[in-house]
Image 1 (cartoon, rainbow, N blue to C red):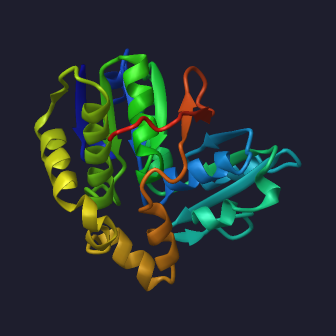
Image 2: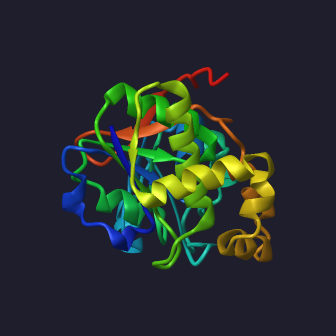
Length: 245
């Protein structure tokens, strides 16, 4: 099984996902928020690219959230903090979300055979799902403003580490995947502190979202994998984290 890690959304073409599994990673904060929303009882999650597209989806059966430059979009029900989705208002509704980076990654990967959203919170569950489906995979780090994000790369490394722990079958990794696997193994005991050194975490702390960074760096805290196959509406794939001991 081949697993490639891509540094940011702009470094891959949609055609490269054909007949592969795609894992979109935006630890701070889009994919962590998606996981939280589905765990809170949302019926599904629809990523959209623009603010007007999200606004058009407002209605009794939807919960609309989004951000630009880390800040909530005026008039939306929520921003991109996972804590905004820890509310009974989410249950039973379709969450519509637009963000600067994570939703772009999901839309870019729309030609994949299967699409998953991952963060540290569901990393082992996501690894189990990838192994169950068995297809070659692309782990797409969403990055930030066309650049690589430390926390996304570390999450890709976590998923690879979990896959190798769960299965004896060797993985074929690209160089970035190999680097992130070894980097994750070196710093997993101080993951929060390492992530806090990254640009995205520093910016979130500056804006008063330190609690989001702490929440989003929890390991295997929410074993729910947002999943889509044909149309790009993510639904919860509940996966029990495999025993890695």
